[in-house]
Amino acid sequence: MPFWCVAVDLAIETIDLTKQYGSLTAVNKLNLRVECGSIHGFLGPNGAGKSTTIKILVGLLKATQGSAKVLGQEVHVDQADARLSIGYMPELPRFPNHLKGAELLDVYGRMYGMNPQERQTQIPRLIDLVGLKGRENDLIGKYSKGMQQRIGIAQALLNNPQLVILDEPSIGLDPVGMVEVRELVKAISKEGMTVFVSSHLLYEVEQICSHVTIINRGQALVSDTLETVSQMISGPTVMQVEVVNLSGATVAAVKALSPVKEATKSGNMLNVSLSTREDVRAEVSQAITKSGGIIVGMTQKGHSLEDVFIQLINKRQEGSAQ
Amino acid sequence: MNKEHPSWLGRFWAVVRYEMLWNIRKKMFLGALLFAFVFATLNLALPGYFGLSENPYFVITFSAGNLTFILFAIVTGMHSISGEYEKGTVVPLLTKPVSRTMVFLGKLFAIFLVILVTYTVLFTYTIIGSIIVYGPQNSLYLAPLSLIGDVISTFIWVSVVLAAGAISKNSLIAILTAFGLFIALVLGGGIIGQLSDNPQALNYIPGTGATGTLNIIGGENITIGNISINTLSAVATGTDSIGNNLIKAVLYPNSEVGFYHQNIFNLTAPARLLYTEPIGLIALRSIGVAVLYTAVFLFVAWFAFKRWQILE
Image (cartoon, rainbow over all chains, first blue to last red; front, side, top):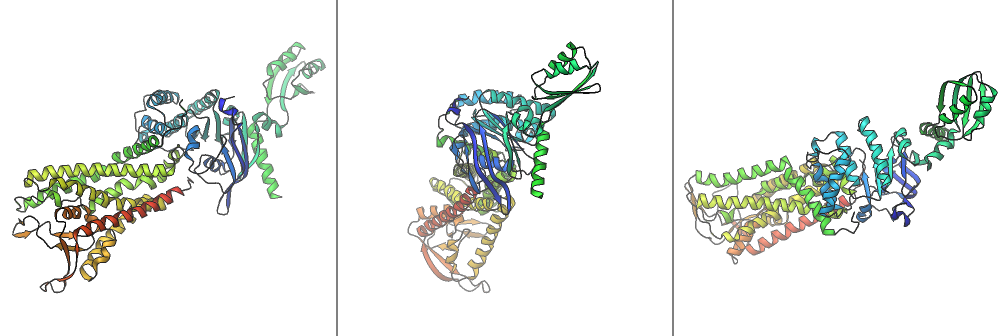
C-alpha cells in the first residue's frame, strides 16, 4: 500500500454526487469509491456522465448536489492546492500550439513548484517514457493527435501524483499506441499511484483494471472488483471439449478437478462448468488424456466484461420501460 | 519528488512565463509590432518630407497613438482568456495547482510586461530616430512619462478585451466589442466635441476627450511648409493623452487650458471660450478615469472567469 494510503483509504469518494444542466441530469446521485493503489476503470457509453464526473473531481465543474473527496480533501472548484497530488489527462487533450513539448512540461512543472533539478530529471524521463524522444523540441502545433495524447500522459505524470485520472487515454492512438498506454498504466500503478481511468473500451478496462464502476445515465450500475463484477451476472464460465473415446471415467476425472463445478457428456462433447475465470485448459486436458480420452477441440467461453456491461444496461432500460 | 508546498510567487511566475511565450510568438503580435514600427517611422519621416527642418519637441509630444493602443490591446488580450476556452487549453491549465485568480493575474501581468517592453523599444527607436532626423531634443528626461501614459491608455482597452472575452468565451466577440466601442467613442467623442457647448462629459469616458489649447506658448513655434504651429499648445483631455498631458503638467505646472466652441457652419466667426482648466487637473483626472475604467472592466473579467464552468 502506498504511504499516503495510510492516511486515506479512498483516493476518490463521492456521496450522492449530482450535476444538472438545466433539466438534464448528467450525474445522478453517484456514489463512487476508489481504493488507494488500485487501477479503477470507469466505464460507460458515450454521454453516461463519465467526463462530467471527472471534471467535478478535478475542479473544472461545480456539483449541483452531493459531495466529492479526492485524496481525503473535499473538492471545490478552484482549490489549487488540492491539485498538487493529482495528475489529470483530459479526453482529447489540447495544449498551446506555440509551446514545444519540453517547454510545456517545463512550465507545468514550475506550476507544480518543481525545482530546476527535478524538472531536468523528470522531463527527459517522461519524454522517453511516452515515446516522444527526439520530438520534444518540436512545437505542439506540429504534433499528431497521437503525439498530443502522449504529451498529455506525460504532463499527467509530471508531479509524480498520488492519483492519476485518465479520461479516455486511448482515444486517437493507433493499436500499438493503445497497447503502450495499457502497459504504461500498469507500470505507473506498480509505482504506487492510484489510477482512475475512464473508457468506453471494455476490453481495455478488462485488461488493466483491478476495480470497475459501470455508469449509465449518470448513475452507477455496479462498482466492485473486476472479478466480482464479471461473476455478478455472468454465471460460471463454460468449457466445451470435443473428445474421442469419451468415457464415464473421463467425465469423472474432469469432475474431480477443483475448479470444475459440473461436467456432463453430450455425444462426443464434454461440457464443463467452471467456478473460476482462470485459464484451466491445461489441467482439464491433462485429466482427459490421463483417463484415455483424445482431445480433438477445446473452447473456453468466459463471460466478458462486455457481457456484463450489456446485461446491466439492458436491465436498466427494461426497468425504466416498466 | 519534492512534495513541499510550492510558493505562490513561483507558481505565479510560471503562469506569467506561459502567457508571455504565447504572446510573443503570436503572428498577430508580430504583425502589430511591424505596424507600430512602420507608423513610428512614418511619424519620423513625413514631417521632414514636407519641409520641417528641425523639431526639438518631437519626443515629448510623441505618443504611440490610440490606434496602436487598441491594436496592442487586442493582439495581447484577445486569446488570453477566451482563446484558452476556445482552443480547449484551459482544461489542462486549470487542473494544475494554480487558482483562477492566479491565472488571471499572471496573464494580466504578462500582458503588461509585453506591452511595456514593446513600447519601450518603440520609444527608444523614436528617440534615436528623432535625434537623427530632427536634431537634439528638449526635455528628453520626460519621455518615460509618455511611455507610462501610453501603457495606462492601452490597459483600458486590454481590460475591455478581457472582460468581453471572459463573458462571451469568444475571441471574435471580444475583438468586435473592443473595436466597436473604440470606434463609437472616437466618432461619438469627435461629434460631441464639435457640436456641444458642454464637452466636459467627454472627460469621463475612455478615448480622446475634449480638445483645448494651452494659454501659454511653450518653447518655439515650428514651421512645416508654410504653416506655423506650436505642437505643445494643443491639449486633448481624454485617456488617450495621459502621457502628453503629464509632460505638459510637469513643464508648465501653472498653465490653464482653454476650451472653445467653434461654429462649424461659420468658420470665420471667432471661437467662443467655454471654460478653462489647469493642465495638472486634466492630467490627474485622465489617469483617475483610466484607472477606474480599467479596474471595473478587469473586475468584471476576473469575476466572469472565476465562475466559468468548463463543459467542453
